[in-house]
Amino acid sequence: GYSFAEAGSKRVPGVRRNRRVDKMEEKSLDKIVNGLTYMTSKQLAAVAHLLSPIPDALDDIAVAARLPRSNQGRKRQESLVVKKMRKAIADDALEKLAEAVRLAEATETLYEDSDVAGMVRAWSEGLLG
Image (cartoon, rainbow, N blue to C red; front, side, top):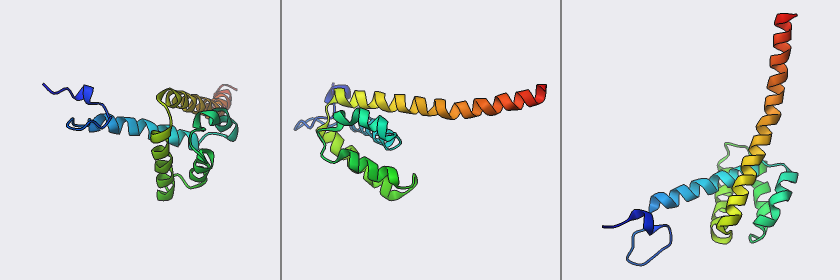
């Protein structure tokens, strides 16, 4: 029988490509690029070497980052970076970038949560005091 799992995303004449695998890879690349646009300049500087195969990668990311979140231009700009990354960046570098994005998001939520924790503390002190 035909195995979809073995087809992968490499183009082999006469063998069907597994679109689902392609789409999943694209989704994770989208997530990485979107995460990069929310990083601080320090966080970006820390992963800049992973993006070095792409000329102007940081500029491309900065352009997207300056656009409003729901802006169609931002989505297009992110897609452009995704396209460049798919061609130029090796899997191990992509995994490191994904990890960096996860870490950046985690610390970001910690910052937000500290405000929430402060409000909860003030609120509970107000109740108890």
